[in-house]
Length: 209
Image (cartoon, rainbow, N blue to C red; front, side, top):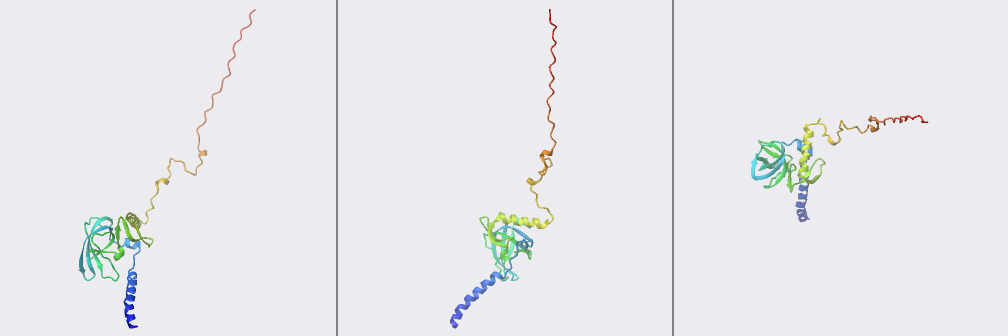
C-alpha cells in the first residue's frame, strides 16, 4: 500500500501544480492591457541573454521594432527584462521570434505587461492565441488586431468625438429630400398654340351684262 502511495503521489502533485499554473495569473481584459501599456507594437527578437536584476528577472531580450502601434517610435532597439520570478509567469523570449508585444517601463528598461499574456507570436501574419474584447482565445490576422487596438485607443482618447459619417448617406442640399413630393414642385408653363386666324373673304366682282 505504501509503495502504491509513493507511486501515485508524484502524479497527483504534478496534476495539482499544472492546474494551479493555469489559474494563478490573471489575464488582463483587452481594454486594460491596451490602456496600461507604455509601448505596443510588432517586434523581432534580435538577441537574448541571461540576466539577474535583483532576483526579479533572469533574461534580457533585445527587440527590434518592426511596426509601432503605440509609444516611442524613435526607438531602434528595445531592451526588455523577461523570465520573471513571479509564480506561473512564462515571459520568455526566443531569438528570431516575431511578436506583438505590450510593454511597460521597468528600471529604465521595459518588461512585458501581464507577462506571457502580453506577448503574442506572429506566424505568417497570423497572431496565435489572441484574446481580444470578447475574451475568447483564437488565432486572428495581425492587421485585424492592429486595427482593433488603434480603434480602441482613438475612442479612449477622444470619448466625445462623434462616429465617422458615411458620406454616401449625407444629403445633398441640391438634391430634393426623399420626403418631398416631386409632383408638388413648380413646373414651367406649357406653351399654348397660337390662335388660328379665319381666312379673309375674297372680294366678288359684279356680273357683267
